[in-house]
Length: 568
Image 1 (tube, rainbow, N blue to C red):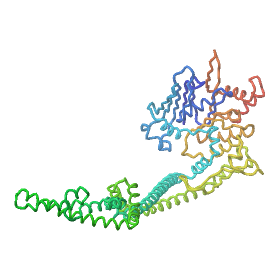
Image 2 (cartoon, helix red, strand yellow):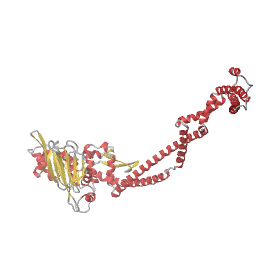
Image 3 (cartoon, one colour):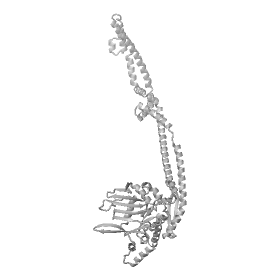
């Protein structure tokens, strides 16, 4: 339990020290005196977020310390945090420093720890219920958590298993979706490569003969000019009768002039060896020129046939080259790059065809994980359905004791998509008064009713394994009179099993405290501070008179305050 709470330089409080007792401890004070400062101090001690501006003006840092007595022996608390303590430790000290610069440090028995670790330890030591917790009670997920807390330790293990199975199912589904997408991408790539390969294979012959085909196209395009040039050459080299120089100058074919020259040289054969050699060479030239003339003549005749085709051969060749040139533009602009792409496409096709999807194995794993998830979900639902009636009955009984006679309380369960906590949705349904239609707690309950419902639920849900100290901040909000006394009685009963610290503004509740602390605000010389004092019995009566709205001279209020204390 929490034995001692020290607060220094936190907002209005310069220094405060509270020594708490087992059972019900109450804290009272005027509105604005600083009761919420102590609530914030406890929140800091439990690992809560340090807000900016909480350090008292003029101070370097705020400091909060809590001393907790530990029950000896094997307890849920020891099992939770025992490994962080020395063997046989009888007390535990949590502390928190918050600098004016916003930096914060947490301590366990003087040793620095992470704030997250402090939060974990704090949750095992203290359970805090304030206005935020009232609102939290209206959230479906919180209601589900509360119902789950009543289903036993095996249920907690099943919840963890369900969350693990849900995570595994989600992971396997994501892997299958990724695999399916890869398979679709593979099929798209296969289709594209098949198309490209078909194109390339259809034009492979033309690709490999591309340079030759280009030359043929150029020859066909200029067939007329080539024919004319060949005919001129053939005519120039055509044979004929011997001519003299005057005829040669008049345009007689060159072959005839060569023949005349050969005849002239041969007429002097045997006179001079050197001239004989030249005559022989000239004869060879004549023979070669005559042969060339014949070749040019045949070439011209071939081209004449092409010209007579009226361009049909050229059109056919252009048609053959059209897909080839399109492929060249598509794959790098050259024959070598296009043929290289064809080889790459063939290799990639072989790779893609050899790949086999692993979806069958993944689907088997998913089916198994889904079956396990369904099993965990079914077990969770059975436990919740079994726990709900007893929980409903117990809460209804508590509500009767909290001045909500005739109120009904039900736990509605319906199905949703299975998630980490199973496939159940929970809604607390209440009818605060007889004849009033029941509705969701978040819509029906007023502030005072919500506070009492929370207290009723906590009275039922508080288990021996829970935190040994409960803190209630304004649990009496929105109530008074007989309802306030009923709430006080339930708090007193709850204090038989737990240490309670109750921050209250109602005298009916404050009068029940086994230890009473009052916080008082004082303003001097332009500076405001708050002090916390443990009250003696007569001081308790005086504080109750103040809370009744009277002063010490009011004998009726004094008598009422004393009656409240005697009734406690």
